[in-house]
Amino acid sequence: MSFVTVTDVWQRYGDRSIIERVNLDVAEGEFVSIVGASGCGKSTFLRLLLADETPSRGEIRIDGGEPAREPGRERGVVFQRYSVFPHMTVRDNIVAAESFPSGLGRFFGARLRAARDRADKTLDRIGLAHVAKNYPATLSGGMQQRLAIGQALTARPRILLLDEPFGALDPGTRIAMHDFLTELRAETRMTVFMVTHDLSEGFKLGDRVLVFDKTRWDPHMPEAFGATVTYDFDARDGGVPFQHILDNYPRLAAH
Amino acid sequence: MRLINRRPARPAAVLLAAVPFVAVLIAYWIGSEVRLAANPADKLLPAPETIAATARQIFTEGDRRSGDILLWTDTLSSLRRLGLGVGIAAASATVLGTLIGMLPYARRTLSDFVAVVSMVPPLALLPILFIVFGLGETSKVVLIVVGITPFITRDLSQRVLDIPHEEIVKAQTLGASTAVIALRVVLPKILPRLLQSVRLSLGAAWLFLIAAEAVAADSGLGYRIFLVRRYLAMDIILTYVIWITLLAFLIDWALKATSRAAFPWLEAGL
Image (cartoon, rainbow over all chains, first blue to last red; front, side, top):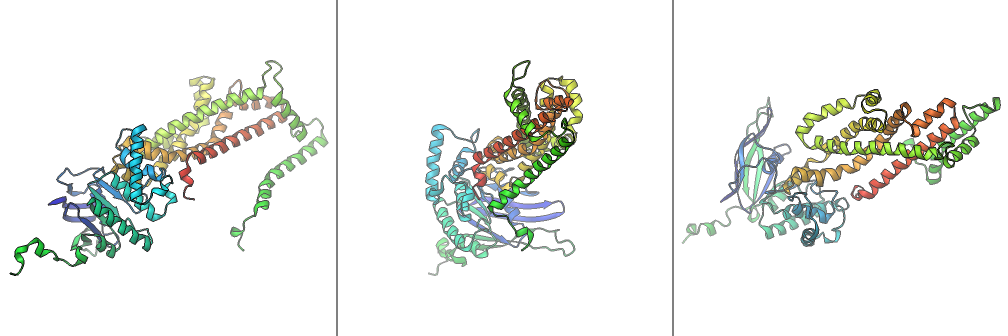
């Protein structure tokens, strides 16, 4: 059953084609890694999923809904940088995820206290309770990204988009963040799209790995054609496909 | 060692900072000595002792006619004009700058207009302001507002545009409306810049204030300076100039302290 449906999506800026003919069906709860060379359009594709840009052609639907024209609460996002609000404390960043849809974007009185209690629980779970009153700038890169993920998940989005979320972290922190993300995912069964430069990261975390590349190439006009999904790997079971084919199709078993 | 890498240590640093002040004082003192030696009745460069005596008199003794201490009434009316002008300018520039920075429609409509208006020399408008608003308080306040609002507006709108797109997108994915983004993300982030901007435009604000008071007023620091100019009362003028400088410095320092206390997140990373 397809949860996110991408139908014949093209993105073009003037004469420059970035993405062409992307078709994709993603089931609910799947973790999709998107890899590819620099400038192959994978970040553009993420912005299209985010509805920060509208495709020149085609459409993207979540759960059969109308194609979105601007980012909204359905889609959570974590960028490589600038993903949390530097002028709010760590706890207020989490509270903001609840209070932003309200009229003034701010809670008062009992509602604020309740939201703060919930935020403290969230911070406990993501291991940031001890810095609840600090400003994000005092946190390490890994902690900031943990906060960003916690904040995005507090809004309970239908899909979570990660744009090279661990690109700026050192290798040790990166591995800790992988465990953190795997744990959170086991709890929430969230549908995730992650753009990454790191192939092994993509295979480690993803159920599917999509590779973006250009299939058509005009040497006189390199920007004439855009990239599309050239490979769609099954990354479950350590990247070895068809490990569960007998469970899914018992009739195939030899008698 | 290269010059760019040589740094003064603590006592030398303080001393160096004091050098230009002392140099100016000494130069004035020598000039005054020389002139007074040639002509004891010289009024152009009164001796430092004369200025000190005049200052004591100005700060403490009331006017012979009204009994008010003129310096304080002048200071009060000048600061009221300055405060009103800068306050109105800061408020309207915040609204305009936020609109221009956030809304593409407002940007298209207003940004070129503000850019052109900021090129109009405000002092050239002074006669118009006097004609339209009369010689009272309004024209002086309006001159300050007209003079510094475009500058602060342009600065703030640019600052809004400089906010990383990621943060605006993030706020949208958390469900924030345009108003909430303005209130919770944009405004808190540009308020420190507003204080900076106000600090930078205070010099211009004082200029416009003194100019307006010089042309037409019945009290105010600028008015007094230009009044006593007729009697070549350099000792009074110099006292007033030093007083104005001190006021400007204190306001600047207060704004800086406010910024530091009000926006702790700015320095959180340092």
